Length: 78
Image (tube, rainbow, N blue to C red):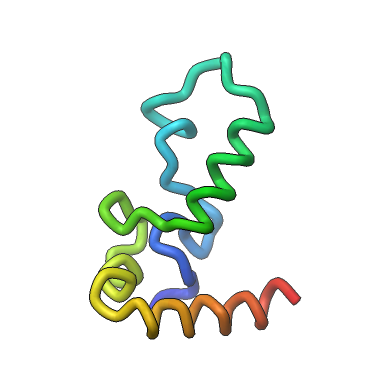
């Protein structure tokens, strides 16, 4: 497993989110970007991932994915 716990976010902080790349328009306000990021973190999209191994685990073994994600939250966000 890589040093990331989410298929759409790299350990370096890269985020795979359409409004940050292909769908970007200056009409987006900061709050809409933050809401989109929050939604992505709550419901990862393994079909558009930056971390293929994590996306595979999310699809194939959700319990293991959730266990790893919880460990990373406890380690880095508490």
